[in-house]
Structure formats: structure tokens, C-alpha cells
Amino acid sequence: MKKTVNVAIGGRSFILDEDAYNALSSYLDSFKSGIGQASRSEVMDELEMRIADLFKEKLMGREVVDIDIVRSVIAQLGMPDWQAENVSGSYTEPVNDSEPKAVRRLYRDMDHKMIGGVCSGLSLYLNIDVVIIRILFVIALIFGTAGFWIYIVLCIIAPAAKTATEKCEMRGIPATAENIRRFSENRKK
Image (cartoon, rainbow, N blue to C red; front, side, top):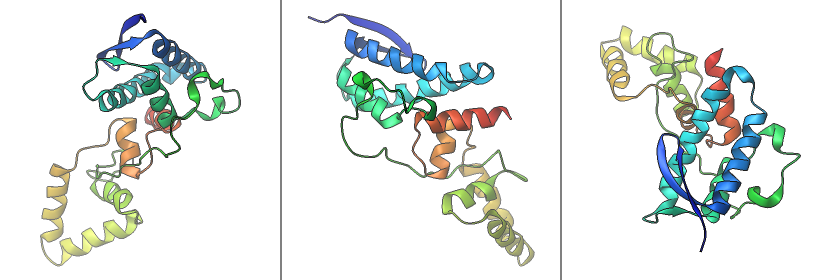
């Protein structure tokens, strides 16, 4: 019989067995130690929300998060650059050899916007230079109103990328711990 612990991660409640709790606690403590004081709470909130999302995906009807789920989540998120050299093998060994899946989604890029962020978000989604997208919209606007209406529809349909996870999805890169930290710190600047 194992002890279980009720924890709140990313605003959600989970039940973890004792081994899983210790591994996750060690991971979060080591991650927190390398973050600057100014952005620590924001980065940790983003990371915890991502961990909570991954726990929900991996539970699939089960109630208790075990050590295997924690190991797979940590393997998927990875260790930040400053921890890569001095990792203790107890909780960071990958469970499988598959890379974290990078999902590419269309968002409005609010960091590099000129009007509504549609062109910069579309350029990241299509992996095309933003200048080309902007020129195409201006040409479509000059030769008719199609450019205006397409822009308005995309501005309504595409949500703004606000969280670090959404910024990773917009670029098509995996939402690893290091990427979450990078985009959370970029938001402060």
C-alpha cells in the first residue's frame, strides 16, 4: 500500500502517489532554482499549467498519478539548459524515445503585431516571412475589399497567443520547460 498526496497543480487538483510526488517536487524545485526572481512566479505558473494539461491527457480514467506518468511528463517537458549537465537520473530518464510532439496552431502574434497580429501569426503558422504576408494583404486590399474582410475574419477566428504554451504552438515547437521559460520571460520585456 502506498501513500497518496492531494496536490494542486496549475489550478487543478490531482492525487499523486508518494514516489510521483517526490519526483515532481524535485523537478519543480530544480527548475525554480534556475529562474530569475523577477519572472519566477509567472514561469512556474505556466509550467504548472502545462504539467496539469499533460497529467489530464495521460490519466485516461485513472485517479492517481503514478511515477510512470510523472516520468513521461518530465521526459516530454525536458530539463532546462542550466540543469542539463547536473541531472540526477531518478526522475529525468525518458520513458520512451519519442520526441515531444510539436503542434502548430494558428494564433494572432501579439508580440510582433502592427494592427491585430494576424499577419505575424499567419507568417509563423505558414513559416513565411511576415513582410510577404503583409504585402499580400495590402495588395488584396488595393485590388478589392477581400484583403480587409479576410483580415477581419482571421482577427475574429484566430485567438491571441497569450500564454507561453500558445506561443510555442504558434511556432510549431514543443512546449518544453525551456521553451515555456523563454517565452514567459520574453513577455516581461
